[in-house]
Image (cartoon, rainbow, N blue to C red; front, side):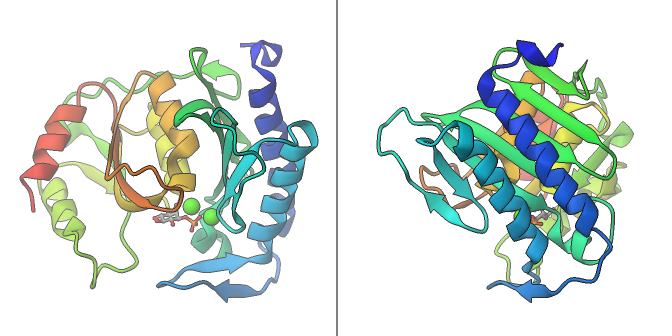
Length: 267
Ligand code: IPD
Ligand code: CA
Ligand code: CA
């Protein structure tokens, strides 16, 4: 795939991600203040803000009338027209890793129109992994076309999961489900970046990702990557508001229904 085959939306998303990636790469490992947002272990650093400002200005410079939903700044509604593009941005997915100097974090940028993804970019700056998907044109990692894995059996799977920060008070019994998955022979990992976990399912590096309580900015780009790489994704609790949380199961083709059944009966 030549980059000039992508739409101008995708090209802007790529440029914005690369530029913000440079900011995060420079900040990674340095001494910076860590602030706490409401909620348990909900950190934010100056680099979340610097990355977000950079991405928003890269986008608005080219598309000044588009709307923006960014994790730190919230919703910026510039146009009220129904078909306006909405950019959904997580400027640093994996802040907890970043704050602990662990080298697993990403930038996630997606453009949506009328609730449908048009393009999605996930960039991991330290490994230089650039994941790009455009509606109808496929999903790519550094220019190479992606397809999901072909693993068929639970006991041959590598599944990324997320452990809730609020496990004690969470109404969901995800820890119990994780235990059951592990007892069925699946190998489990928690990467600490939901966007990266989705990108790795799209790339066929892992077989599935499953987690409760995600925000739209964690998954907006990843949803398109999964779709364009031939995977399947179920988004539970889908609501038409911008700041909701949702649960996601993303898998290859073969594992989707078995895992849905398994999760439904393993509480
Ligand atoms: C978090 C990461 C993490 C997931 C959390 C998210 P943030 O995003 O994606 O993997 O478990 O639910 O909030 O706060 O680092 O952008
Ligand atoms: Ca996030
Ligand atoms: Ca974030």
